[in-house]
Amino acid sequence: MAKASTGTLYRGREGMWSWVAHRVTGVGIFFFLLVHVLDTALVRVSPEAYNAVIDTYKTPFMAFGEVILVAAIAFHAFNGLRVIAVDFFKGGPANQKKLFWGAMVLWLVIMVAFLWRHIPNSLGGAF
Amino acid sequence: MSAPTIPAPRTGYQRSTAKGSNFELAAWLFMRLSGVLLVILIFGHLIVNMWLGDGVHQIDFAFVAGKWASPFWQIWDLLMLWLAMLHGTNGVRTVILDYAERPATRMTLQVVLYIASLVVVVLGTLVIFTFDPCIAGADFQFCPA
Image (tube, rainbow over all chains, first blue to last red; front, side):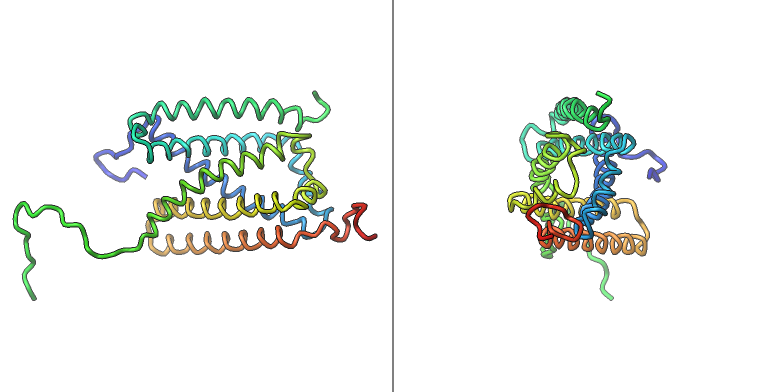
């Protein structure tokens, strides 16, 4: 969106890229949420309709999608808490880079814990 | 027609006395408050549905019926639905206002967003409150045959 001929205010590094990733993950999660409410609404149609659609979430392809989804949610959650820390705490703005890398460590911990359960769960008898 | 007035030098910044709406401040604050609650609500949702037990393989009609038999999970899911939809709608509104420049585009995208959000919130709320474990096709022992 850079339209200025003399450069822009975008400064790169942790601050800008976490902002970009926060938007991308946020919009992605929102569209999943719309779909997720609709698929859950099938419990009002019939157990068969609900189970048929939910079963598609148990395929290896969707298991991969769930990894992307959880990665996006965990990023948005921890970076969101970082934004709150930057906005509300005295040392926040000065330490925004450290807070970003702290959020990334938490993200990695969550992803390892999730994959440890999700890979055996979603690949069924393979493990 | 009066000539434009030039303020005297060193007048300083005059804060506008026009009382505007506090909507944007409220929206900004809501994003942070709902964000904290959503971290708890969604992580709890993911742990119970995707991590404990058999993970994604345990989810079926009976699993949902088991959860919504308890007001605890009904309220949990209702709060999650409303907070996530309002948080997400306001987030996408911000993105639309940042990137869509033509007034007609800004208006159209916002109208589509608000209609979609309203439909999903109303539908989701109705589903939680009208859920019937003994709907045709359900084979629980406590359901009349």
